[in-house]
Image (cartoon, rainbow, N blue to C red):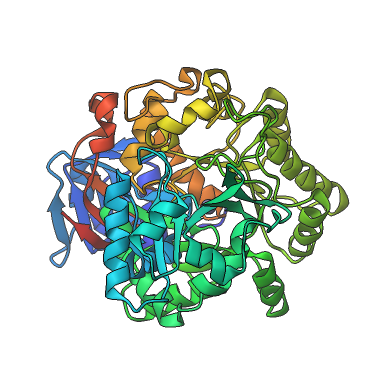
Amino acid sequence: MSFDLSRRGLLAIGAGLGLTGMAGWRSEPDIVLYNGRITTLSDHLPEAQAIAIGDGRIMAVGSNDDMLALAGPNCRKIDLGKKRVTPGINDAHAHPIRSGMLHLRQVACDKNSIAALKQAIAERAKSIAPGQWVLGFLYDDAKTERPITRADLDEAAPNNPVFIKHRGGHTAFVNSMAFKLAGINEDTKNPDHGEYFREGGKLNGRMAERAQAAFTPFTNVQITPDDYRAGAEFISRYLAERGVTSVCDASGGALAMRGAAAALADGKFNTRLYVHFFAGDVEKAIDAGLRTGIGNDWVKTGALKLLADGSISERTAWLAEPYVGLGDFHGISVMTEEECYRLSRIAHDAGWQIGIHGNGELAIDRVLKVFERLQQDAPRPDPRFRIEHCTVLNVDLIRRIKALNAIPVVFGGYVYFYGPIMKFYGEDRLERMFAMRSLIDAGVTVAASSDYTASPAEPGMWLQSEVTRRDYQGRVWGASQRISVMEALRTATFTGAYASFEDKNKGRLEPNMFADLVVWQKDMFSMPSDELISVKPERTMVGGKWTYEA
Ligand SMILES: [Zn+2]
């Protein structure tokens, strides 16, 4: 190790040795936070009272006396009032920039009844010209008394095409005019890797996976680069309110990076963003000389993102055994192994991390085969392969994940939020789903995520869901996978940083790390586990700056 003899380096060494009297160096932090209960997640000093911050990074961590002794006349000293402080939350898989944009432009369909949903759609339809598209997001068909149908949407908007996306993104619901404009009729066959659902032989309005492609020309037309900028600005504020200081945009690509960079230039983007690219984008990015990790401390390129199957919340994940109550339906595979390997290999050779979405065991097996082949054919020392979601596991899959040191990026809040759909998987299978306990026990690095908008970007919900395995109606699913609050916190912070090669800079409160942290209103370590969802930030700091104050 080389010693950095800068002010920060000296402080880091001093704090590491537990030295006092550092004020003798006349170094002065910008801010000292003191009188807190600080969970650092550091092996050297797991619990501390105070933190000294300068130039957006942590200078030292320690006792009140030691840290206050560093404060000079211009230093701001902030009494934390014994509040719990943790590293900032890192949502390791979400769709933030697009979500921000949707919040600004589309109908929010997170309603609890068909009537309320129809009303919201009817209101939007009345406010625009006949024939214009009504687009909606955040719909969850398990939260309404039954899934919305084509007939409902025809009633709500008889003169406008309607396209409502499930919050998970893998299914959508449309009305008759939308079908007509997209050229889909009762005789249309299901495309490869997609399905138009029918009832009594008639289209019922619901579709899954690649069946949605017929609508993309209509649903994407109105988005401008400025929408991405505005979306980035909106979502950065939204995430700060929830204690999220870093987020991986799991499908953003060049447009999301551009939007975030524009908001950053305006001083209105205060979240650290790691952006995955889909295959088409990656090839252009490779031509431009880009690889994973290019950018700055705020916005940088992430992994090549591919998908191997469908979704958990929308019951299209590709399972080894059929869904419960859905006949012989095993879900949907969305990419062949060869296609997956071919695209991954190009990116792998060009220095890209690979992140492949795999939910069901059959999909995860396919993802692992691709990773195993990559390491056989073109080994890289630390590729940090990501399995996005990695939901349904078994002993053999976990062994192969460990052998590759691949990183499962698992849904944090799904048991709590999607309780009503868990019956399609069944109790036995739930003991192998969102399998944080098994993965941690096997020594696998696992990171938590919301997949927002797929589930709420609420870290308190992740904690409660992972610690209790109880859904919002009180039913327990897969109790054998419970983890502790401390383990849950680690998967929400440090391991997310590891999954994006940023563990040297964030995820722990240690000297030289970014000053990204959350002061919580309540102490997650001393409250009933069934109330963890109520844990909210009092203040959020990113890079030494408060980005949210309640
Ligand atoms: Zn996603």
